[in-house]
Length: 97
Image (cartoon, rainbow, N blue to C red):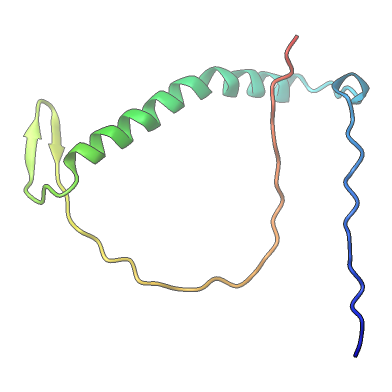
């Protein structure tokens, strides 16, 4: 019987925000600030869109509401499998001042 070695991954060292190197990139900083401002509005949009579509679920007829045309249909999504892959993950968090 072959014994399997238990592989344990070491956690990367946690770096305090004060220890992070500073990168001067005005363009990136401006885009990050704009992204932060849009985040709240985007969340409101997503919540409202989900709420509206939930209310309209199951209505297969087309109709108008004010300046909007509403249509709906049931869509059949076939099952499929995806090959494993790797991708780059980036996390952006605003540092509290």
